[in-house]
Amino acid sequence: MWSVVLMGVAGLLAGGAISFRRQGLPRFISISFWVLAGMSLLGAYLLTYGL
Image (cartoon, rainbow, N blue to C red; front, side):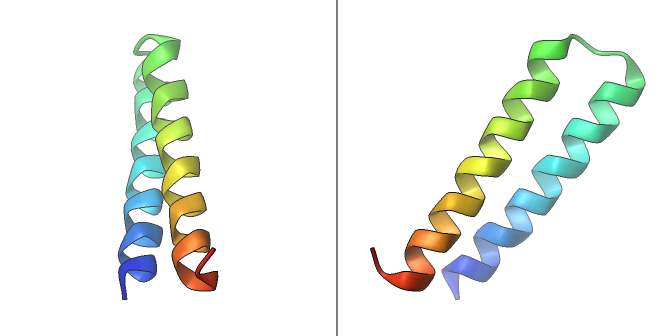
């Protein structure tokens, strides 16, 4: 259940990163959103396989 929620959060964060990049906001904001999306996917993976 929580892994699906984390995957959804990762999708929203990735969409936000793409949107911020197109708007021309500072690069560190986009990079931080990509990092958070990756961490969310990693958390979903760890929850799925119980590591």
